[in-house]
Length: 365
Image (cartoon, rainbow, N blue to C red; front, side, top):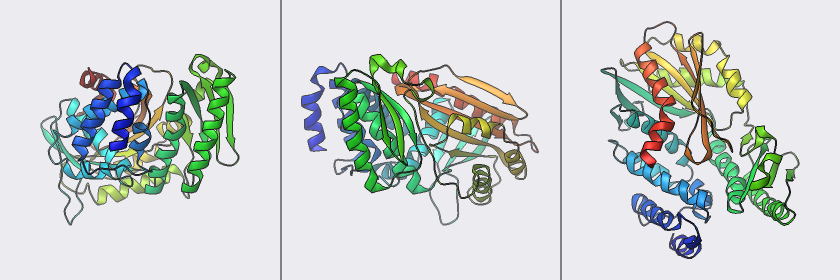
């Protein structure tokens, strides 16, 4: 961290947000503790290694979210997990959704971990307590290395005033990440020196486009600023989600309060999220648990183009899409319980999700 701070003291002088960006890095160290040293695999490492206006803006916003998150009762264990590269993805999901609740005006607190399974959060909605569990559809290795792989090319191209997008056929092995970084450096150099869009292909692993910012339109719109990744699916995604619901509701959400299960899938494609929206079988799983108000599948992604919040409803399901600051977007599918009346809780959760861009904008102002 001493080296990172010294680097930004020199490199950030030419950026409009260089000074507040450096202040954000100091604040990050203050929140995480002066003993915190992000290892090479920590998702924040790539953000801290880049001096650019978008990167500084992202760090400034992330620190503001951390400050707000630190006002939530019981946040300390999640903060410890954010420091560690292996637990950062799951802790980030728990932080992000808690902020959605808090910024929507819902009182919430983290539940201390006990010997018996407990929910992650308890929130007050419509004058009742609601248990909330936040989990991932992916294996821990997929979350950890997948997030790192998705950020490598994105951050390198931002630093070079370029835009990129493409696909990974699978989660890379740790040994392949350096190859991705090296090939990206080579192709970025070509894109800039010859002022054109170029392809980056590592057969069997990666295909993506890279172009200078002023040639972003040369990249097909569906890939512009966006990466997707296939993860191992020994069983269909619908079955994996159904198994996750059953496991979590019988464990962490087995209390008497109405409950909400939030499941993150960081590697879903646009078509994959739309397919899940059309998936009626999940309603049958949700309906078998009378205390379960709804299940929320959150699919984060990046996009070069921003768009306003959108909501579509179909037979008790909702599809919500919106852009967040810093090129981040989320697509959420919400299944309500068709066998129990939890309408007030489900609508509160849906509004909390769709209002998150506006609430974050207020936080960042």
